[in-house]
Structures are given as structure tokens and as C-alpha cells.
Length: 438
Image 1 (cartoon, helix red, strand yellow):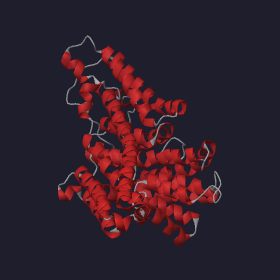
Image 2 (cartoon, rainbow, N blue to C red; image 1 turned 60 degrees about the vertical axis):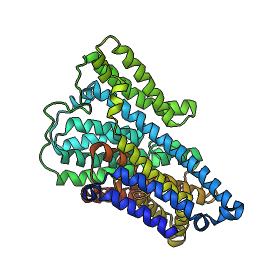
Image 3 (cartoon, rainbow, N blue to C red; image 1 turned 120 degrees about the horizontal axis):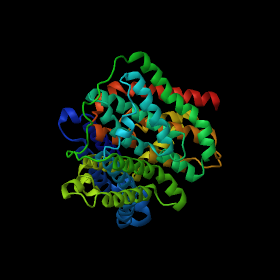
Image 4 (cartoon, rainbow, N blue to C red; image 1 turned 180 degrees about the vertical axis):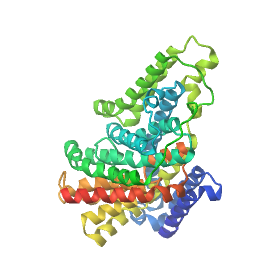
């Protein structure tokens, strides 16, 4: 049954990768894969979960699976609510033409200069926020700055790389660094001072390579493209208030988490609620159709729901592998095979481009104690970097990649052909820097 479960998982990923050829939406393939994997867990419980059977019989197995599924759905829901709230805030900012505050200041049409500007903003913004939120915001900006779909896709791919690199050196920049920080494997100051340079090289080396490879200029949209079908005029005051309130709300999320110790999605929902109330009061005297176009009730219909369902399916499928013990078994095999912290972490990073990095890091945290590798040891620093940046190799390997894929409709195979190779160069450049300073 192990083989069947893994085969279904791989088949699902193939369908996602060949979405364009099969003419089947990737969200449909992801949802189906996630559900079928859990069905196989139920059917093959005697094979996949012998320990639970010995402990409590078939009823014990089913109870274990129910609890496991509910636990995973709870964790996944946190990500989905975070994503939904963040995307709604971005849509609301877009409806008020708020991104023109930034795009009007970016006047260059040079591909190379624009690439450096976009990637630099993404890198540091991702460290201050997190890579998922940053990816959503930057995807909206790219639609304002770039007319051609090919340009949007290429810059979107580099945004994924920059967002993941920026999140890897910040204790709040990526889910995995948050896990390691809360678990006591790393401290905030150490992860910043040690991993920032490798993360910077992870982005700089690809940018330098592309500087000599890219030529020409980009075409900007003749009119600011809106994610909304309706175009409603707003004055400068409304535009700037909603934009800066939206940005402040996004930046407030890690502060909210630090103050309340509640999950990040609660902070994002709080920011959305504040922005919702403000826009309702701001437009209360306007005509109904204008008010609706500029309110949350109007723009939320424009949120890319298939992307959220895609995310749900992917995470459910990975959760099934984790529940079956396949990921923990894999971690043990890696340790027995390589017996070298650099090789183990390099492989974990590359594997995170296929399997979500969260369960991989969770498996490593469970496998190695703080007695084996003390706090802030090279192993944990390397794990933070590799798990954070390795997902850039494939577009479905990180939360930022999944978000960009959905928002800009980037095809899986296009990403493999055009971005994966440059992401690999950056990944190994960062590992090399970490090895030299380690």
C-alpha cells in the first residue's frame, strides 16, 4: 500500500505539471489527489499503520486517522484563511488603485533594472512580512508594471526566488523558520546574522547571471490593469489611505503574533476587519454600485478561489504521506545514507520543491534532538536555509510559488524550463557561502 499511496501522489503531481496538456485545472487534480490519498490510508490502514492497529485495533486506527485528519485540516485552514484574508486585502488595495502609489515611482522600462528593483523589494519585504504575503503583493504589482504575459511569468518566477530567499534568514519570514524559532532550535539574532549572507547570494548570483543574459525593455500597460472588472474612480486621499492602511495591516501581522501569541492568520483577519470597517465608512454616502465595487463584499468575489482549493489539495496530499509515516521514514533513510549534515540538508531542500517543507522540517526536528545538535548549531542554520530556499526549484515547492502560480496563471513546465535552472544555481551558491562561513 505504501507503493500505491506514493504512486497516486506522484500521479497527482504529474497531472498538475501537465495541466496545460491535459486541459484539466490543477486545482481539480490537487483536490482529487488529496482525497484519494486519504481514502487509501483508510483502505490500507493495516499495512500503513501497524503501530496504531496493535495499540487499539481497527477502531483505534480509524480514530487515529480521524484525529490526524482533523489536526492537519486545522493546520491547513490556518494557511488558507491567511491566504484568503491577504488576497482580499490586496484586491481591496487594487480596487482603490493603491498600487499606483508604487508603480508611478518605478519609471524604468529596462528589463535588467526593473528585475533588480522588484527582486530587491521582494527580498527585504519578505523578511519583514513573510514570503507568502509578499508574493501576493508583488504579483499584484507585476500586473501593473508588465503588459506581456511572458514578462509577467518571468518576473513572477524571480519573485518566488527572491521571496523564499528573503524569508529564509528571518525568524518570521517563512513557516519553517517560525517552527525552528518557536521550537528553540534557532534564535532570532543568530539566524539573521548567519543566514542573511547565504540568502543574499541565493538571489544575487541568479541576478548577476541574468544581468548578462537579459536584454531590451519591457512594455508597460497602456492603462493600469485592474484585477476587478469594474473601474470606479477614487480620489487621491482614498487611494493613499487604503494603500498605506493595507500595507500597515500586512506589516502588523508579525507584531500581532508577537503581542498576542495567536496564529498569524488571526492577525491577517484583524487587519482585514479594520480595513473593511474603514472602507465601509469611507464610501457610505456613495451610490450603491460604486460602494459595492470598493468594498470587501464586492472585491472578495474576485479572489482566486481555485488557487485556494489547489493549496488545500496539495497540503492534504502531503499530510497523508506524513500521517502514513512515509516522510519520517524518508528522513531516517537520508540520515543512514548520507551521514553528513550538509548532504542531508541539501537533499531535504531539494525534496521540499516536491513535498511541502513544513512536514520535512517537522520530521527533522523530531529526529534530531537539541542534545544531538544544540541551539544555533550549523545543522539548524543549514536546515533553515535549505528548507526555505529549496522550494524555489519547482513552482509548487513553496507557498509563495503556489500563490504566484495561481495569481499569474504560470504553467508548471514553463517554470521548469525557464526558472528552475537559475533557482538551482542560487540554491547551491547559498549553500557554498554557508559552508565557507560555517
